[in-house]
Length: 262
Length: 298
Image 1 (spheres, helix red, strand yellow):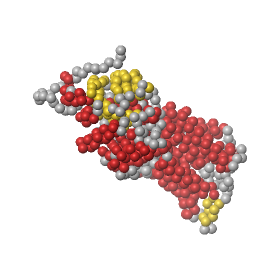
Image 2 (cartoon, rainbow over the protein chains, first blue to last red):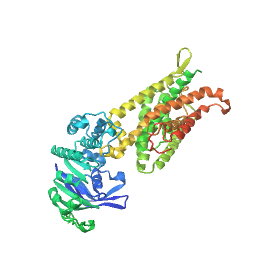
Image 3 (spheres, each protein chain N blue to C red):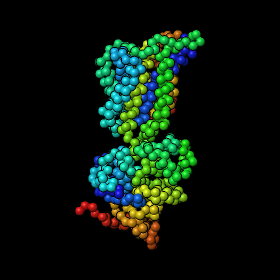
Image 4 (cartoon, chains in turn red, blue):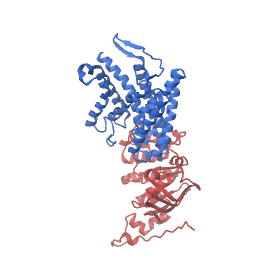
């Protein structure tokens, strides 16, 4: 189980971005983390992967645990070795390097099983298998996203963190990415899926969290979230009835269901 | 002297410059810092060669090997002690700091040695190869070319095939991506400094190609690698090589012909040529011949 408990993150010593959030990714589950821009989704993933300091951020409270062991003070490289890998937002492939080199970089911490993991990734993404020597920067957007996910899988993680894998992709490709996430999960990897595309994320996940300006405002089974009126309106763009336009402020009345402080 | 002779000397000179320039580029690529400590590292490494080869009178190649190991360790220590705490600080501050390092290393290390030139104790002496009866090249220059080519091929293989080399390329391209894949960026910095220090040490063997000696004032010669990297574009190893050839040959040609053609600018005008070439290149391409456009202008 990968878990966050009351995590608070501050950037540049003054900007409070996460205001005590908690979430859990059980072994082998897919968990969705939804929220508008600036809610703190990416920061949550940064906190887990231990790369807050790159952006001058700090975890000031709370803890991140992996099977009960705290991992929030470990270096990014140790966290990868423990089996938590992330595909960053916006693909971030190494554009000047080849497909194969990108994947080899992913295996930096797990060199011994390079071949095995490479076969697994090529199995998931036949498109990449056809062009190992291709310069990554010339791949299409969809292929780059696949390469980014594949690279994150090269360390054979137990938990895969995906930051908006559907960003900027055509609906067909979003479907494809969705199927791949299901397949990766079927092979035994837990997934924490951060998405703007709530429809996609909630149909693939078993549990969903909704983050709003640094606070968890909802935490339910995905099937329930899909039925929730407010989620339908604000994240899925579906109106339940009438054509009256409700203001965002009117509906923002969630209460946190869970309390961790006793 | 013939034109061919000047070209030959220019290529040998380019070999030395390329060794030094690659050190600059490796550090720049990994840290985005222009290290001015390279000339001091060259003297420092060279002095250990002098010490082991002449004072202790070990075999020259063994002396070089020991010096290389010491140089690598020194690079690691310098990075850990002086540069690691500066991570995240403005690169300008870090660059200035390397100037301080350069001065300190030269003064401290210089106190243990003479200020007068000392022989590196290499086996090449004044031996020369003669081609076609007229083309003369001494063994040291040949050695410089051989070492530079071997080191370059070695580095290319390292960056292409090894795990750490790939990690260094990744970190140079996108540090955050390297981090998230488990690369220790601190290790990348450390290895860059060790590599640069070793390259500088190797360059010290050839910095005086006619004499095979080393003197504290030779740091001026090493400083000419700076225009080389600026011309090549700070973040391009290939660019550094092309620029090394350009500068080396320009300098050798000037050395050969200038005293006849323009006697009024005096002797040793060739020493200034690398900087002149740099001015011209910067006027046309401020980011260097092969540099990335976004790279900071120096």
